[in-house]
Length: 188
Image (cartoon, rainbow, N blue to C red; front, side):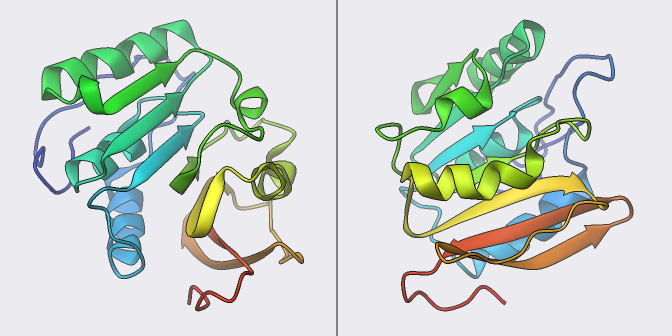
C-alpha cells in the first residue's frame, strides 16, 4: 500500500498482515481525496482517523498538507504500525496515535476536527449510529466533513444535525460523506 499524493507520494505504508485490518484501497482513497480536494483546504486542517487500521486515510491527509492527524485504533499491533509509518515518513510530530476504542474517544472536548474518517470493521454493529454520535459530540467543526467507509448493506439518512451524501460505491465498499446542516453548501 502506498501514499497516493502529496509530499509522501509513492511512499510505502506497512500494516498488519492478518485480516484484522481492511485498509482503504488505492482506488477508494484516490476517489475520496479527489472529492475532498474540491471541498476542503488541507493546509492546516486537523484530521481524525477513527478505526484507523493502517492509518492510510490520516496519513494521506498529512501528505496533502493537514497540520495534524489523530489516529484512534484499538488493536495494539495496528497502532504500532501506524506509529512506525509516521516515524518512517518523518511526520510523527504532526500526529497522535491513541490505542483506545474509537466510539469512546468521540465525546465533547475531543477535537475540533475539520475532517473525520471512520472505517469500522464491516462486522461492527454500531456503524449506523456513528453519524449521530459524531455530530452530537461537537468534535466536527462547522463546515467540516465526516466520511464513513462501510459495507454496501448499510445506508444512511440525513438528520436535523447533518446531511448524508453523496455516497460513492466501490463494489461492496461504500463511502458516505456527511456535512453539518449549518447553512454550508451541500456536498454534492
